[in-house]
Length: 238
Image 1 (cartoon, rainbow, N blue to C red):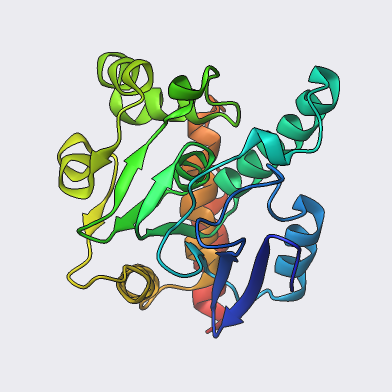
Image 2: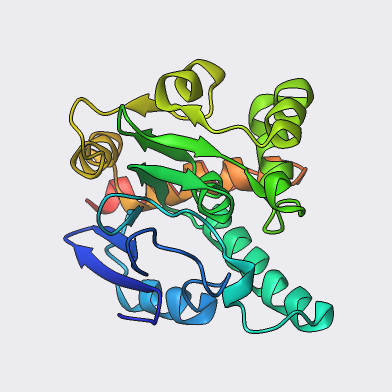
């Protein structure tokens, strides 16, 4: 499936979503793939157990270029940003394993996309940062709150207020990325990572585990109710 900013395809039971918009993969539209089309595609590919998001070429994404949004009308911009926020909330809540394969620059909206994934695998030379403060704005796609939940208030505040770009090794130390790849390209290692997590597990188990974690994060009471029984019933069928 192709859009003007991305391409989505399946490699066996892994979905690969590639941001593709010029050398820096700029998000000239904050909603880089239509949310409804993504969900429909996943429904049509029920074998999918994981989603890997990457950028085409050298960089993951240098984020949004507001000058490319086609408007300075705050009402229109708000609608565009809300569509993007809804897309990232959807990715965040998918009942599959989600990993961002980060190469090169991962800035602003690009990092906000990566933060919507459960895991981030970065190449050793990757640079990451919420750099919007340097351009007179702040992150607009939910990145600040996700960074806060991931790093805690003190570290998240410092990173956003300074608009700093940090190295992959520093990001690993902070807990911003899950692991560093051994090679220059993190994609192959991200795929190997999700394959290892999925190995020997049914989709019912994967969905049950991730759905439980998502519901627990939302404060739902007894989020794992019924999950054991569903997996046991499937195991007996096998």
